[in-house]
Image 1 (cartoon, rainbow over the protein chains, first blue to last red):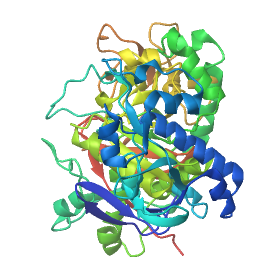
Image 2: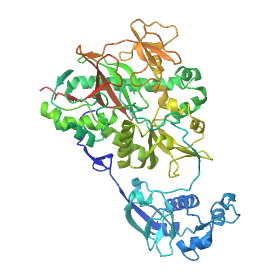
Image 3: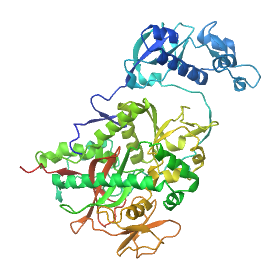
Image 4: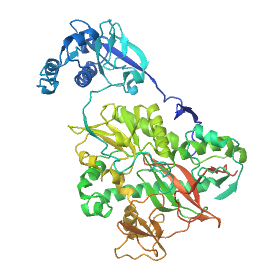
Length: 198
Length: 379
């Protein structure tokens, strides 16, 4: 219970950042592939490759940017790189997807998933979520959030963790169902973590 | 156990603020480094041993409580949430931290459990970081080779590392009422530790949690919340609209729902019932039931915080709440002020001590946090 090791504490943009050897990744290693087969061919375990590919497909269904017209989608992702959302999702999940229709009855368009990224097998504790990759009209592979991972797949690179945080599309139907008894903007009274018997 | 005066470090406010302790002074001083408590090594061992013993008895009490619905009801847990609490214990959902408040007068005195802050323990940053830095920057100048009963920070790192290994890491959300600086500051500290030990962390306001049509909780960027550390009491959450979504949700909580058993002060009565002759457990009973307790007694509400709803039993009971009665016990005093030991529990093990000092015998929101040191072992 005694003798904490030496702690060095710095204040980083309003948040305490406590630095301790062996525990501080802000950069993560990612691998990018065209397919689970390529991933396995490059020496990774096939089931890990396939599991990550499936997770990337799921994220694609949720998070791919959606466009009202094929033209808008292709302007960003290039000719031949877009397809109706319904069709893509049905192909992946085998299910009907009525929500993918616009109010006008037309389909949304999404870029095609042309590859995927996952955490590097050499750094499993970095906990990187798998994501789909699209190719832009300019020839770069990007995540749904738009992070550029280069002009070719089948390699490993180091990136800032914040740039590969997965995004999902809006699906919240209600907010504020916890803490709803608590008014905002309280100034002087103490919260739950404040000193006293709390 | 001694209380001694000392000079504050000349720039102490800037120092502790740089460590995140922006709430060092409120309307009254809180962080107080013009004084410190000094313990013998053997006294820290007494506290540590009592803490380890109480942890084990508390787990026994949870196991007992979940076995029958009336026991959970007697703890103030609504029947519609019994399954959540019971299931959490049966799954052995890991717990992260809590803090025992112990009455201890030093030397060979037997520590007595005043209460267990099992859900939202305060004074974490002060304990884990700020008082350690005081020891290195000041305490060791006052007492050469002084130590401190404190590995709270390391224990948190180890706990998060293990949690990340068990769960594969991934995203963890840290929710608090962020317009309270202490709550936000504490959440940021815990999130920082977790983020360095295998998780990707997001700090957010608890009130921004959303829910989807299929029952997933979400943050403001529409990410699914799969792991949530919350600085907010379980009994409040269970009384709020999203409680209806908890049973079906696929989400892990720190602290887990079973901690609510120990967060209710009714668990103090349960502990005495299960272990009536235990040296560290004070006689206690549910107020309003027949009991064999002897005066003087203190009345405490099940879920009061900051010393609210804690008063001598001879005073009138406030209506509308549930109470226990607990035998009064002596806390350390020098005649002018009282001190209560806070003993941290991280991942089920003793992790460090802290001291709070107040004028009256009940520790309230006006209590001061006072750093401590251990004298080096005598040759």
